[in-house]
Length: 396
Image 1 (cartoon, rainbow, N blue to C red):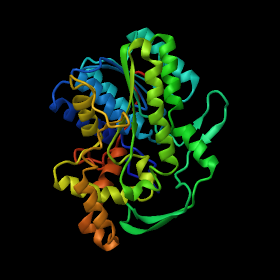
Image 2 (cartoon, rainbow, N blue to C red):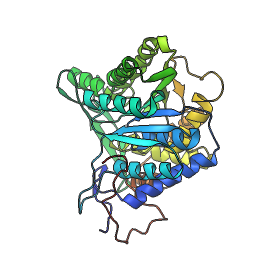
Image 3 (cartoon, rainbow, N blue to C red):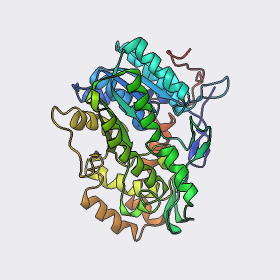
Image 4 (tube, rainbow, N blue to C red):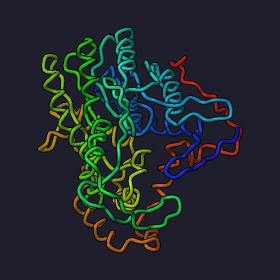
């Protein structure tokens, strides 16, 4: 079939298998170009199919020569209907890993469930024995609680007061004001249940009890802080409460892993184009300004550059892992440089549909969004008939 992008709001309803494969190959080539990392050798990535999770899996495999298991929840293809991009990403990753002689297997299902946790533990026992690194990179709007059976939905709302600020429709480039009503306590509680640290803790407890964590095993979850301009709807909003909970959970997990000398960290990452971030008002406009400034300064990074730097400069740098005063790894350090944030704050005052072309890089944002779904790669001929029925080798 001829596969073209079909948009609905901040979601693309189609994905291109060859484009997704190109995206994976590009990331692999970047990691290989940076040289070997003396890091983890048996890695579990929970949320492994897109964004930071995929980049973490690629960096583990092609930077550290690690055996990897990836867990995710993706839709497989059907005749005349494409899979979700994470499915095609994983298929491409496993094919490239096999070519490189690297172990790679994947599990598709609800990572919040007890069943998928057990299935993963069984696979680790059977094939790897133990893992020495667990990456937790889940981004889901809903969670079925495995103990109560209640379906919780996260919300993206400010806390305490109505929020109004500028945003952009990244498809049209139109800058407008957006207003969001404040969250209820139920909204806050549900968001913490979905996006906080409880599930991460459940994974680590289940793995420790099953004996599949190696001595000195490390686990890393991902968070974001961001600038003042987004804080009302992000860091000081419902998602921020969930991130606070996630960060507090790292200390609890570290305490729980004392007997194996394990450690849990939260890495605060840069603002990047992901399926999750594209849904957050204000953020695409902020990113378009940030990307232009960072590109001009040669400091702009995508997911793979961020994760390669996290692994090589922080996690496996040969000495103690540097953290801030709250115990967090700060790989958002370049984004949060004061001169960048001062420049964005100044531009924000006068940003409009008319000034965005000169002051921002919305094209970089749009391209990044299309790339998530396998579109926009110059190496791919999108007019060609393409087989949508690409399967993941390890998933029968």
